[in-house]
Length: 448
Image (cartoon, rainbow, N blue to C red; front, side, top):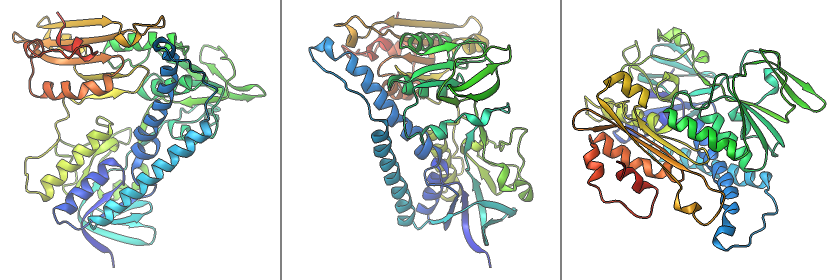
């Protein structure tokens, strides 16, 4: 006989765990099905271990400026294997904490691969589970291009399995994963090159951010080559060699990392047996309530193709549980004004419209304020990195519709400005706020 629950959650990542635990707090009987380690992409091969590596690379940059402040420091080297050991132990502790938290809330944890039998029944190995409601939160996976030799490369998942630092690295991609891992490799001493299909990095972001980061990456020693479309990869005695569609052969490297996008983990679920629609790329379409086309089946997180960010999945999952089991009938996630950070070197924080988007939306009825400056941190030395900020306002009252920050501390300062934007802050509100001096953030409230 199938085991019966009020709610089955397929996927033990950030969104799935958030919805399961919130539903259990309301008294629902819940089971979570996960085929891999608890925590999903973010905890195991995403945000958390990436931030550990970012910190490691960040230290290498800070060491370079120590002499500016009177320190005599010699950095002998970096032990990648030791860092991996400590990082992996930290992640293992988090996995255990997630399982402990499920137990505390009475959520059943089922390890294995889930497949739909029908719209209310899931099979995991030889067991069947039924529920009144089902949430699909299975996340996504890195894309490997369909070209000869592509399997010789690695993905962002594989990056965290590297036992030693590769001496020469080639990264294919222009998005946030590409630039973040390029910064890590370069900061920890790898000869790093990034190839992009078009003319720069972070092309979907505001042009100021894209331009500033490209310049900073090249200044730090990262080579960026534009107009490169991979055609083949082959292994030679001197390393991996990528050939582009125009016939150019790039120099051999020890590691090739694909950062060319992500696809949803939906193919193995047998969604068709439940009647759940997917789009041409395999993503599960949902409405604002996270509902699929099947009344009692919901989807959230990366598998939906909407704002693939950990806090988004968590927020969507909790709001869904609030609505289904907490009596909050109109509770759902507003996907507008989502802040995000790129953990590049230096960091980027952004929320709201780009300048191009504002021009398309408001015509001439918008205004842009910018600031570019050298942070005080670099004042005592010769090796300096500029910071840049942009405010975009719209309408007669100059409501702030875009905030874009490039530079040290952008990751930490953006959260407060995101709150202000959601509250409808105007340029006058920013102007009337007393600056905190001396900080990078004060530039945000002193632009003219």
